[in-house]
Image (cartoon, rainbow, N blue to C red):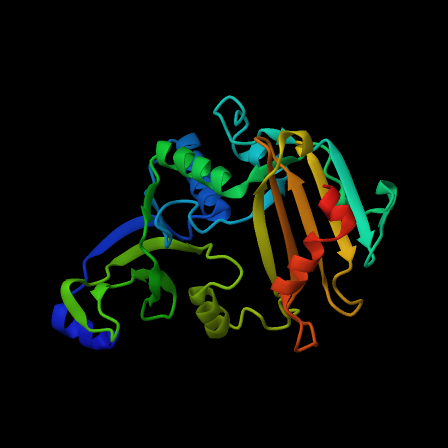
Length: 300
């Protein structure tokens, strides 16, 4: 059954009204929710804010091991250290290597662009940072609904966005309602903020409807493969950040690797490959396996 048939049989939909509806419970969506509440509190106003998150819990879909600049967090929550934000491992060593098949060459730090200079930054689990942001948002009165993906966009008669519709639940593989069927509900907002990530399905609809990509450069896409290792304590170097370019990728293939030593003998290691590669036989997964066997990488 399509959405119109479901609505005809089981409607009308329930609806909830908010001042601000945010789609996506990642760092951007949660930070926006926190900031909105802070601004309202500072002006003595009360606003209602909700966050929809498709994952089973906040942070469930955040897979990145990351090096994080705390500047934005300090601006948002100045006392984040006292509040126990999970930023524990400050960067102590920063290396950028150019790899060949059997050797490596370190690029002097003074030659690197600013984005590869990580003094004052922290190696973090972005999932843990996101969970912590969710706790801060809830403490301010933000309503968070995990496990509720936004399925469609609501428009008014003038074509303006006025909210979203959550996905219906209790459908079988053919899309027909079961005994547990529950019709999706409308979340209506005076403002609706889409924070789905780089390629959200609602974002694609909005880009097409409002020509948001007109006169803009095309987006660049890549695939990232990451593993989290537990190493022997003698090999753990908390605070070490290593980035590489070159091998195993050919010179005409965009990409590079990262290797971050966290605390607790953990190491996040991964390879990113731009999806513009022309070799039809290139397998990013296989390139990652080769990368891990490089003499310099095995040393780390």
